[in-house]
Image (cartoon, rainbow, N blue to C red):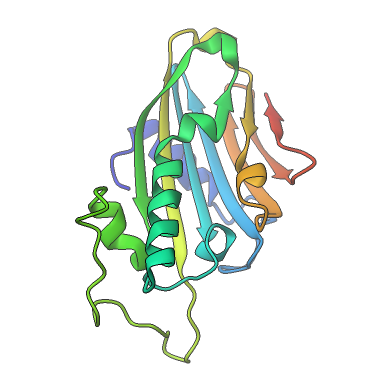
Amino acid sequence: MNTLPAFFAAALAVLFSPALPSRAHGPHEHGAARMNLAVEGDSVVIALESPLANFLSFEHAPETDQQKEDARALIARLRKAEDLFRLSGAAGCRLEKVELEAEALEDFIREPSAQEAVHKAGDHPEHGEEGEEHGDLDAEFSFRCSRPADLHSLEVALFSVWPALRDIDVQMVTPAGQGSAELTPEQTLIRW
């Protein structure tokens, strides 16, 4: 995910600055995710970091037919991010780009066709160095808005789609300044 405009790269660097108070979860906590939101002019970038277990019942490369089907469905759903991240309706925002990274799902991300997304035995280790598996998903969603003056909120629909997700720590840079929020199934709206 290296195609960020200069502003977004700088904004996200600020979001991860050690000078900011951190409410973020550990590097891999099931049920929890981190999200960065950067709004500048007519552009919105949402970066999401989460354990795969928040979206799938496994964190390794899909092995069974059901796991492969679940992986394809997850990727297809994420690529329709306009259904997952609802920006102020009056702002006329449209999804421009989705970038996904998940080592365990790389064959499925690279090849959207169900026939081409084939896991090759031995391509992915089944366990980490200590015998534990911790697969993660990093995603970046870029939107462009035709009426940015009307852009004042973001509704996050991830919780209703993936109930294993319970908490998202958000860091943001918007026209209103820097801030943070915590999203839960009961609190899914960010306003600025």
